[in-house]
Image (cartoon, rainbow over all chains, first blue to last red; front, side, top):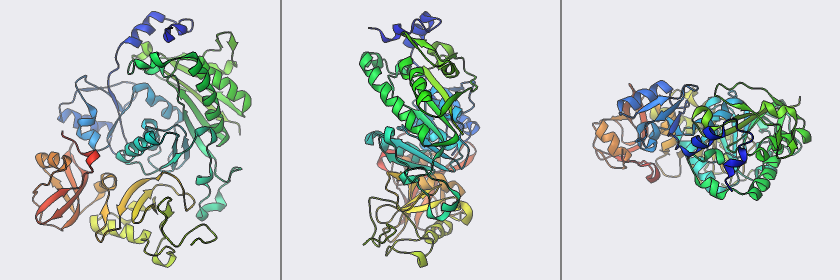
Length: 318
Length: 174
């Protein structure tokens, strides 16, 4: 079956949606503000004759000309830029961490969002970057180091059972900190960018449609629920958790949120997004979800000529 | 040998141990101190001592020092803590490429600025012959880009030539 056809009932313009999914995506880089400014990257690209244009909604994202291989430019060598799909730069900005905070990135590799979070934190604070795949972790480490990130602590664990123990209290300031049941301190924020069916990346990787199956959707949705639930548990009361995927499947998006807000003390909150998008769906395939899942946002490829994306912001009850 | 607090008198290559602040607080024999690490950077590259106030320093593996912008309990059994910063195992301490790229822009001495051709050769991992009459040893190899000087990596200046220390995986033919 054509996995994209199943979304006809929820996509307002299925023809535009399908047409956009068939177009390749331009190469985009994000400026790493730990090491450079958008202005300096722009001047370096201009001096080197690299064709680029700003994306409009985000000062630090440049679409590159078709003939540019970003890895072979001085700005890449210096760690000034990171190749990152335009919409994938969304969730870190929605999480909006502050310098000095404790932030969790439970599904971090290969690190585009991790390095973006570190830059938003001015590389100050504790950024725990976890992944279950050791090979992908080494890519994460290489990317973080090239970007000059020093605030990241890298862990190798199953995100469904993440332990806070390694991030227990440093003996030097134990008085000021509260701890959770397993001995660690809770996080101020978490960015839960889970593994998913990835149809939203079809413009970059058409193979995702070949690999798609209903049983995979069902299996991975259970994993996503557990990862998001654990992230909520280890975030402090009043803290923020952002959930994101690059799939259009409501089973992996709104249904996961619906379960987690029912089982955990947290709620969906509104957020602003300047990119064109639509609200989360409250009905799918005979199921109904909590009306608050409308606060989540769906970005389809035909909206802004990007990949597809899903993003929701949750607040842990105070 | 382990003490009650989990710390050991020997280095354990599988975990991170925070460097002692000074020699008086040293438990593991031969472990460098925070003061020595900061002093080395400050003296070698002329940084402000305050440049590292926000960082803790850790050892994982004998002589491999990491810089971390936060603090956790020591020892820490995790994959990575901040960035690799300095190797102190050899007689001559060696900064890492990542540390030079991150902190080397604040360097005020032992910075060799390469012309465009030499900068490209340096990035390819080649030995170059720049104009340099300063110290021997590890230098910040930099070039001018977008109206300012930017470090590329570590160069070893010996016998009148600059040997690129750019790791194989980071070399590029631009």
